[in-house]
Image (cartoon, rainbow, N blue to C red; front, side, top):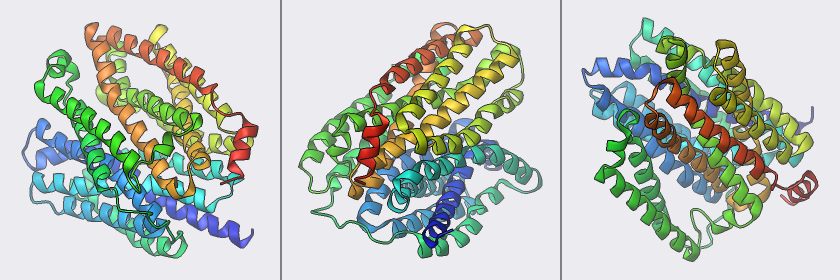
Length: 460
């Protein structure tokens, strides 16, 4: 093995464990919430802020941290993200009240927002084009691994210790990651060509924060009433106004936080659209347990365990499709992914459901999502975005995916509620999602062919 290859493996290891640290936090928070609620003698409604605050600050931190890494260098910003995440974890672990838990979760979310986009950008900086797909696939598999082991770890810790111990977990990660990142990650950034885009940062934070908070106010059990809420519509209008203001400001900024050229080609527009679409499909996984409870009469706990095939295929499929990506290019992999997702969601929506059929559908959806979310869209952005905007481009993919995930709740909840809920309502929702996946499949035909993509890669 050459020294360069060995160094790249060290870099990949640093990135892998940093993303794993953040992903495990997402995987353990579900089991931890009831323990946090009971520990502070509060309500389910209040404890939801533990999750919502993380989401809000994660959305805001993603583009900001990515932009900083483009300008200040990957190493320093990656280390800052890890430190912020660990600081938030310690605040949660030591929290004397629910308020301090929420504060710590906000710090965690802000730090975690930059870890995955910066990791993806580092791969573009350090790996040759013919090896990027495999590396991105390995990083993408982290989420499947985290969701396989995270609930088990949380269950063991909660059985023998208090919930506080779950949030001490990132500390040993940081003790290993920070010196390794200092040694192996790229240092130099691209200096800003003008004043910092503070107006753009504020407008983007307002837009994303308002949209996330508004969509989190939707109540699937009482959808119509919650959708008519003046507070929700006020936030939606505020988000829309902020986005329109952002579009104007970014055209005039010296160094925009989201450069207009990240939407400057058909390939970039398609990648962002597909990221949003993949987020919609991924977000629907939250509703599968409700479908299983209604269709088979199983307990909620049993329904959650029945989702393991989706998680397992995500962890296995991401590196497999990443390796294939280096061989055949992004278009073929994305076509496979959207086709698998379309067939899987169609089985849930159009065919009389049995346990065996569900596992087949779940596996297809899992493999489909691993082909979309693991590497190909980030691979496209590494090829198409200018090197000085590489992390910002990765952050944009993350933001588009997260917005798609949030909107799924509104779509699935609306369709299910309109048909009275239960198995009938949820299967109808998956029919809509199957149609959406078919649309994504057709849209994928517009992507560049392998030869054109290879020519673009050689220029990066």
